[in-house]
Every structure is written in structure tokens, then in C-alpha cells.
Image 1 (cartoon, rainbow, N blue to C red):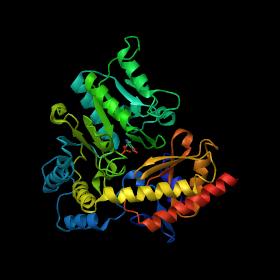
Image 2 (cartoon, rainbow, N blue to C red):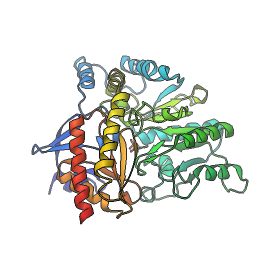
Image 3 (cartoon, protein in one colour):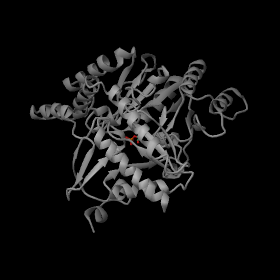
Image 4 (cartoon, rainbow, N blue to C red):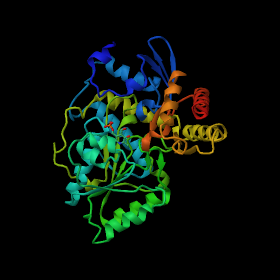
Length: 415
Ligand SMILES: Cc1ncc(COP(=O)(O)O)c(C=O)c1O
């Protein structure tokens, strides 16, 4: 029995799916202790957008460590934090005409979602929130109440109140906007006016559901008209994943609060922030305190990550690789069986096998792992294969991974 099986809690998950001991990782490749190579189409759930051990970011962090600079500092002022904030403002916010305050939260996505919900409630004096079927926002009670999947919600073991779920854009046979408008306008809908609408513009864990531009614009319009705060959870699909730094840029909208985590620290260190329109920045000092809001390695890596993103014109790189992925899947995978469907944008794609058999996706993922490809399933009954490689993956490695995936889908469908 390994130390994992004897010592670690039963709650462990990914180590069950990928049962090897990982030892080394470089860009989109990982190696186990036996020297076996794995192509990474998971990017640590979207926290390694700029690749494992990105040399530019690593250099900045190593230099910082060499100089005996502070590592954890609550929210005290440090040069590392100042430089991150300045880089975020100059490289990302200003060029997009985005005037936002930056709040450093506890270092997980779920903590930042909790902060966003609290802030929306404080601003409006209302309690309720509207979220969407298929949405994933985290595992602590406030964010879990916004998360839709039953399995995760049951883990709360208490009621998860104050959230109404509406069908997301693209839900078959349902007009999502009509539902939303009805809930808000009918004085017999049974739902009080909410403080916020929280959404992912591309539902990642929910099965790669891409909201349409018109839908996003309409939600923005409704929020403005009703004085409801629009919270965009860009934790997984921000940081360049969808082909622009923020996932909502394609709709030309500005949310009231943007939630970022995962790849915002550049190097995989824990970090989460809110971008808040200044008029809503009304927390009292310490009202959302936390010890680990000042991980300086996250600020250093975050600054270098933003520089890397801009200097390397990642938007263009993602556009090229997005085409490669889409064309490859259309030509080589959708042709395996007409029941296979594809959804995605930028460098997040979902291959939906539910029309064949819901559990097929997990079988494919297990097969892929035996051939050295790491990916994850998502969506209803985990029936969608999720492709989420680092944005920096080399075209040859990307094609090699896609070719393993094709072979394994062919093999699983044939059985
Ligand atoms: C869209 C989204 N929101 C929130 C979270 C929660 O982030 P964390 O796991 O860091 O708490 C995740 C995590 O996968 C996510 O994908």
C-alpha cells in the first residue's frame, strides 16, 4: 500500500484518476518517477495556462527567492504587490478601458466567489443570487449554493439557500432569457429580486457550454436595468483561455465584478482576486480578511505571467491553436461516429459522448491515461471529454495528444 492509500483522506480524487507518482513537469509535459511521459490536456484545472515551469516566470521567482524577499505578508504593502497591481493596471486594465479596483482575496477561487457574493449583498441590501444550471463556482457554502451539480451540493449536508438556478444559454428546448426575465418581472415568480447574477461565460465543469454573445449582452442589459450586480466568474476561462485575456471581451461587456484565480498567479501558486467597479468597492477594512492574501510568490509570478502573456501575443497564439484543435477534431474525431458532438472556444473544448453512452467519456479518459495523455471529463454524468491544455503547448505535442485521443475514442466507441 502506498503512503497515499494508508495516510491520505478518502476525499482524494485526481490521484485516483492518474495513479502514478508525478515528479517533473515542463510546459505541457509531465513525467512520473519511472520516467514515463504524459501530455497535459488538463493544465491543473486551468491553473497552468502559461505552461509548467514557464522559464520567464520561473526566472522572476528564483531571483526573488535568491534576494531573501518576504514570502507571506497578509495585505501589507510590499514591492512585489505594488508591482503586480501596477502591471495588472498598465498591461491588462488600461488598454481595455477597464476602471476597476483590485481586491486580494484568500488564495482560492471559492474564497473570491464568497467575497463577490458578500459584496453584492452589501451593495444592494438584497440576499438572493441568480446562478445557472451547469455552473460551477466552488465548494464552500456560499459558492456551493451557486454551484449546480447535485453530487457537489449534497456534500454540503445542509440547505444551500438564497440562490435560484436558471437554465443556461443553449439549454435544449428552453429559452434561458425568457426564464430569467419571467423570474425577475412576474410578481408571482416566487423569487425576490436578487443582489447578483453570477455566471461563467463558458461553463467549464458544466460541460463546455459557451454562452452566446447576444445572451451575454442581454444579461448585462438586464443587470443594468434592474440594478443587479453582474458577477463573471473568470476563474477557469479567464487569463487568455478563450482567446482574449477576459472571457467576456468577445461580447463587449463589462461585468460589475470579475473573479480571477487559477492562472492569475502565472506559475501555479495560489492566488485569487476580484476586479470591482469602484462604486461597488465598499467593504470596510478587514471585512473579508484572511491570512494568505499576501503570497508574494503569487504576486511575482502573476506580474511575470501578465508580461509573458502580452509580450508573447498569447491571443494570436491561442487563435492559431484553437483552429488546429477544432479542425483536427472535426476531421478526425467527429467522423468516428455521427453522435459525437463538439463545443468550445479558444483553448477549451468539449467532446460530448452523451448521445452514445454517458459513461463513455470516463472510459476514454482512462484509456488515454494508459497512453500518456492526461485529461478530465465534465458536464452532466461526466459525459464530456474536456480539453484544457496549457496555452503554450507546442503544436507537435498538441497534435500528438489529439491523435492519442482520436485512437482511444475510436477504440472505446468500437467496444
Ligand atoms: C469556474 C470556477 N469557479 C470557481 C472554482 C473554484 O476554485 P477553487 O477550486 O480554487 O476554490 C473553480 C474551480 O475549478 C472554477 O472552475
